[in-house]
Image (cartoon, rainbow, N blue to C red; front, top):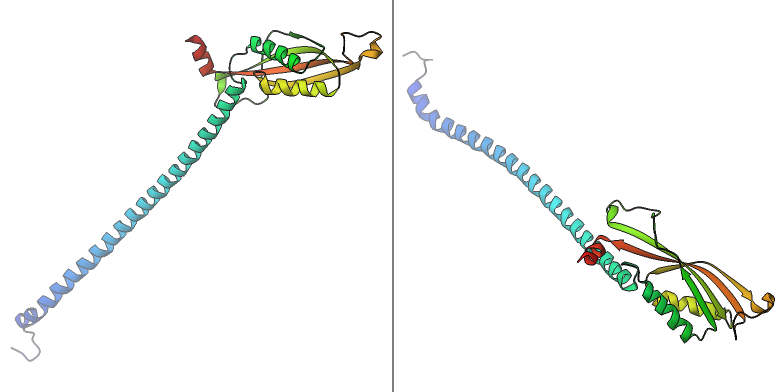
Length: 209
């Protein structure tokens, strides 16, 4: 054996274990880095899914509040008579009771046939499930004082079914007409009133049953 020759047995015996240990350490390190990356991706996906679920939950809560709010408004409109089939008998009875309660000297009216109108803004969600109807009421009333007309209209808006809109009102002093229309009436009022009602799909279903 020369002076500079290597004893491979001795060398392997003393370097094999450290080399194997280093190899195992490198493998474990690489595996740890890969596993950490996979877990980071999984965490990002879980976080994104959680954020999406949270947004969906908030949207659901918002829609539920909208439904509750508009349901309450729907019920109030239905109690008002704005939603539902028009009842002309109730209108006639309301006119009679109001004129008697306010002791008006004279009240006459004429209601035109009901017409379907086109809404100025159509709802995309409603479609053909909602129809808006209009009836025109021509009203003539003998009044003692101008305030009688305000009281009369206020009572109609509060008690008559449907949603009403005063289109026009003309008042004429009876003395200017040369003769009195009715006893005790100082003013003759002629008004045009629009009566709106909305028919929804559930109203049709209820009427059909």
